Image 1 (tube, rainbow, N blue to C red):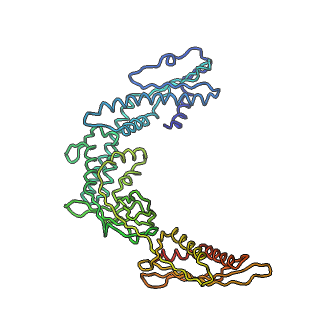
Image 2: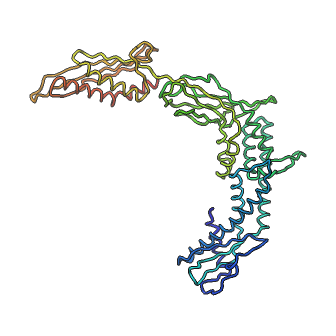
Length: 468
């Protein structure tokens, strides 16, 4: 608990209160025996002597407030537990929040009664504070009444939205009203509306449950979708949020829908609001998991409905935990994932040895497989693409230093087998290699060609495939 501003005020008040400094020889009665009172809560704070009077008094004051707060907590917890019946159980986090908010509400009203320091430094510094029990009761009554009025207003607003067919607005109002009085959930709050008496806590909870139970997700288009590994889906995952009520037209716009991959990794839009047509959608930017069958769950995003509803993060989380066990409509999309199939062929002149061909083949396959998840097949029939790599070699005699030079000219041609057309063609002309023999210089030219392919052509080739 942050008492910094309160302590500054208290320290200034100490200067105006009766203060016994180190010249005092007699301990005040409240130091010798803790005061008892039917009208006040008492707090006594002690700080060890350090030589820094201002700091010692600050710590003593803080300890006095902590001591008083501990007494308040015991009293409020006891009062709250007396309200709980066998049919009602209050969660620990709700009780803790109620106690904390009640204590924070009155700490600014703490009175500084006295302070004392001993000329025997080992006895330290002492501060005596108190809080009126009547003031606490009155502030608690006002706090509860304000919470009741806010909750009732939100309940009425929710019912008005419901009557007007605005389901999203109704749900938000009911949840906000529920948050207004959640710390009193085990204390029935009775109100009257339109001549009818009812328990507001119960009415708000039942309204939330009823609205959520009527909201049903339905798939637009197919629930099973085909996709390709390392590629985005061609169309978004799309749902419609219906409200099961035969009374008339309705709108479920503005309700958040969560899209979550099931036990896989996937780059997708994880949350979306329903639009004016009651539709929400999620874009899958890339299928990053290699599994052949993948699933994405869509459900009402209760966390998005709650978090940020109030200005108190702790209260938001308490409300969320309280509503997290409610059944929510959900649907599951199935995505059948296929790799891009590519066949490749290599047409080189007779001067190029077969083992050297493997160098360029491995470079091409590694680059494309690692970047796009392409699966290579030895059969051109049935593949999506066919990559043809042709090469012409040229070797020169050794120069005066006994160094041989060879050159490789490559042509990379990519054919779309489904469209039966060439979609990419590029030439790497006269890639140079040097060595102490003709074969070594030719191998070097092929190695340099493989490197040049990765550095200069691979990104181009990937871009072409991604755009298809």
